[in-house]
Amino acid sequence: MTSNHLIPITRIHRRVAFTLVELLVVIAIIGILVGLLLPAVQAAREAARRMQCTNNLKQLGLALHNYHDAHKRFPFGSGGTTPPSGSPGYSAVSLLLPYIEQDSLHSAIDFRLPLTAAANSPARLQVVAAFLCPSDKENPQPQAGGAINYMGNKGSLHWWSDPSQTGIFLHSKSLKFSDIIDGTSNTAAFAERLLTDGNNGIVDLKADVFLGIGDPNSPDEAIQMCYATDTTNLANQFPLFMGAPWMNGQHTYMHVDVPNRKSCGFYPFKATMPASSRHSGGVNMALCDGSVRFVAQSVDLPTWRAVGTRNGGEVPGDF
Image (tube, rainbow, N blue to C red; front, side, top):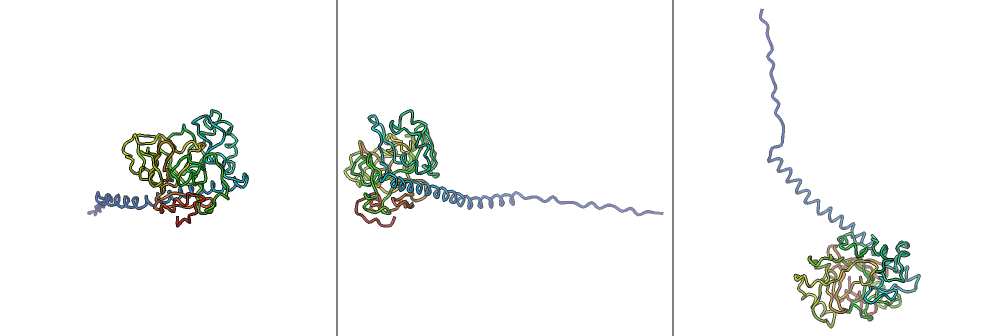
């Protein structure tokens, strides 16, 4: 008797895997998606930084109004106690501290002493987040003190120390709302300015201050001489660190040239010093009425200068 034996049939399983070509295609697609997504993410982050910057300037504008309500005048642009020869005066924002919820920091400053005094070092080194634009780079010289990106409007003239300057924040001079003949909505109070890099071995055309050659007789001539400065020559970087400490009243900007153009200083007391930022295409500016505008760097020069004057009688165009 024969018995039938079943012969088992072994099923062959094929292993499923990506081929090299398929893997390369997937990687290419992911790369394209990342390439499309990254600019959108960066744009969203910059929009948030710009909004924060706008809010910082808004707070300074409101503080300026509250200070005027309390003192019946604006703070000076630079001043305070009579300092030793060559020492800087205190800044306007030093006086605005109580009006931006920085009462304790204001109390830590001994205004009877020069801001460079050892007793003022803790306050001078304090970093105030509300003074910094998040789009700018970090303070390259923290030992100089806490930095500031928001500077007061000195005016539209090329004279750095001229008491007849046309702006709002002048040396040892406090103005009032009644001095703003052109109207508070037509006159700049604060605008952004980049911190200089503190390194004469690096050239940053928007942030650095260059040593202009010559003695300009007008704002237009100052611009021409500034543009003619050879920025590839590192010896032409002006030995001036703009942005720190925030207590220093020298940190102001000018309406001689439109935003984001080259800055120059001319010995002994002339400059261009425009507003500047790392936002795309322009700068934030707080007007004397407390509002904040984003001004394109393509703004018309006469319009920009008109916004820099408090009593020039101009009617600014769109800005």
